[in-house]
Image 1 (cartoon, rainbow, N blue to C red):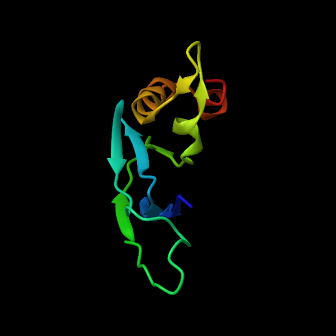
Image 2: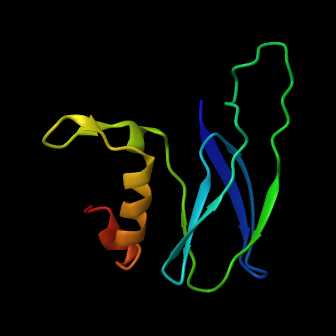
Length: 107
């Protein structure tokens, strides 16, 4: 299973996260910043212990944080019935980031 988990300290604007396969994306001043994930899933190693990196990101006022499942990029559709793919997903995040959060779900 892929997942990203985060906690935000709103006083210091510090974000701590751990991620399994899916990175954490932040759009800051019109730029998409990718924060890395560990390259292994959760719950797949029976009897084996895997530690996830706990990473820290200093947020800035106006940042938009995106957490997502792999299902978005892996979905099939469009006129040719092809996968959406990660590159298109990144472009979409940049495109919708200029809209209010309440409007972004329309894309």
